[in-house]
Image 1: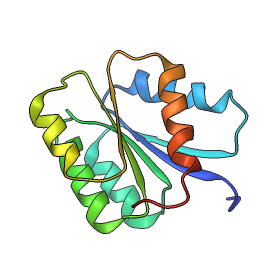
Image 2: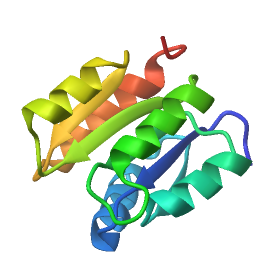
Image 3: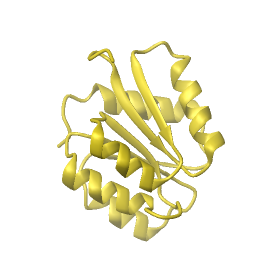
Length: 129
């Protein structure tokens, strides 16, 4: 792995969506190392072995959900930026996200260009606060 590459972990139980996001990011020609997984459980396994610069996760997934995943990442991997994507935005979701600093939020359905812009904005930040 090239150390200059930014490492992104994309987590959503919709395999087509993770594939589409990955392809969209790969087309831009930036130095990215993208890993996709379709469950919070497998994301936790990946996070236990590897360092990621950015986590992009859905909230509603079977098993370990996105809220649980974000809690683990914020506690155990504070250097990892987080972007949450959901089709189920609510007051509870906003209250949850307000507990943490430096978390991006995007509602489904979204334009890939909007998500790409959010991802690159987070990857340009030097450190997670």
